[in-house]
Length: 157
Image 1 (cartoon, rainbow, N blue to C red):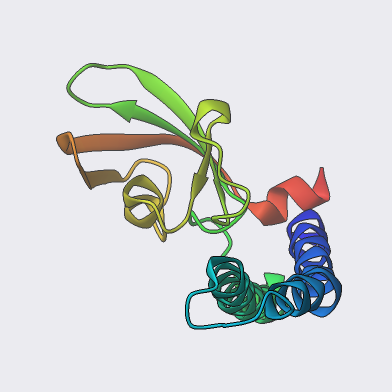
Image 2 (spheres, rainbow, N blue to C red):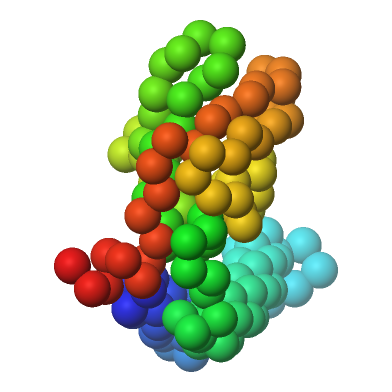
């Protein structure tokens, strides 16, 4: 969680520097070219400014939400943020291991899936032995939870 917060803070810092230093320079330079109604550089810089402001706002909101995460509120013995879950596809009998993470940490190739993804949402709140139905773009799948390690267990190890 600390890494995610630091990543968000770093991204905010870079974007704020762009907002305070680079974009005002670009806008001023574009203004010097005269008529703003047909000034493509000016309009592009203003559009970038709006985009960066919206991005900073979104990142601040995301950071605030992450700051409110309290490990004491994460259930023990049930799949939640930070859990590692070993599942078996009941149809193909194939096993997969997933770690439930934030959207910023997600990397499906590494088995890091967002708690907001279809698989992540379906696993949330379930225990070892439970069967869960997952609705994916590829269709419906049923997984059996074979093993579950919660964030509480990982902190203790």
